Length: 410
Image (cartoon, rainbow, N blue to C red; front, side, top):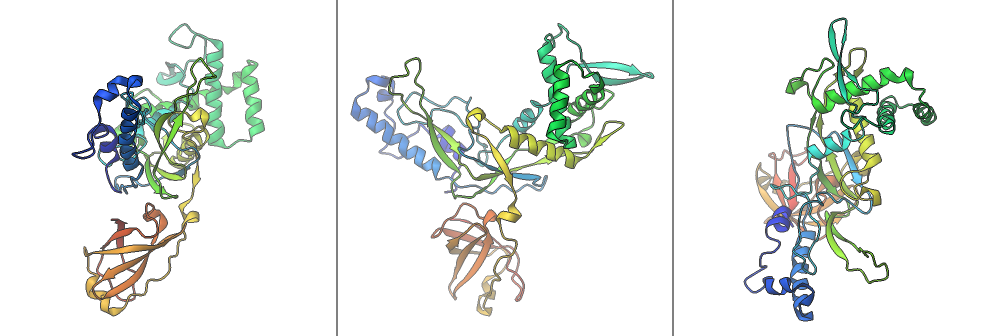
């Protein structure tokens, strides 16, 4: 179903379903004092609302401003993002926890600002100071304990230094044993030789997240890394949304807990992460856009995104579409009698015959008869066998060439 989930979940959730089915607010306000029948009616109301949301399909989002940089596939139990948004009135059967959804498409995007903030959390975030070297001011990390701000504890400063080594370790792809030996030196206070690493990562952090160069001056927008929204592109199991529940016991571990229902993105959904990265010139070293891309991917796969990552939510694994989807689809044989129907912008209908990991097979219906076409699975991820589809011809068909068309669920 191609409904806008943001509208269903954030605007229309407590409105009536139809002229005969609306929420009994008097019963809701009674809370635990509502009768069993009133509770059943409330629960039935929200079951219909929830089922509608859970049937929402992925809406393809095309953007020519940026290209996909890497794709990651969600692991079990899925993604919870935007849980801090208020979404409940205390009714039985409602989704209790909020969720961040794109206003326009309704898709569960991960905002570029969230991606940026999550990535910066694993940089050292040293306090900054300006120094003069041959009358040239440069930004430097503040590497001593001070009462200024939060740099007033030796343990905090050591942790920041370890974050710097961690980022350097990923960039250089050093051996794990070598990296752990360096961490031990920080713990023992024997890291005097690491100052160049601290300075490099500190300056890299300012370049990426502040748009500030080595001399403390702000770069132009054309020389700044840009973080775009991460967008769901493939639902490998055909389901974008699912529900889950937490069962808090409170202080009494013997009581029967009341499950709290919430919305989530299902496992196996693939997200495309988008950036516009530049080469970062640190003076004596240049960090390429490709190196930063690999760094970002490693941080996201290692640490996850969103809420409840400590219990498994928001965890990803690398996803290679070329391995998951065959590059070669079966050749489409189209009889000459269909050519008149295959003109640019023509819309036809059809039905999905079969679906596998590589492709979707569809029968196109015309007044002259039917013929078979194929689409890669990642281009039509929200369909199952038997679904009706709308097929639009993108270019006039030339006999002997491939048929250019788009397809979407009806």
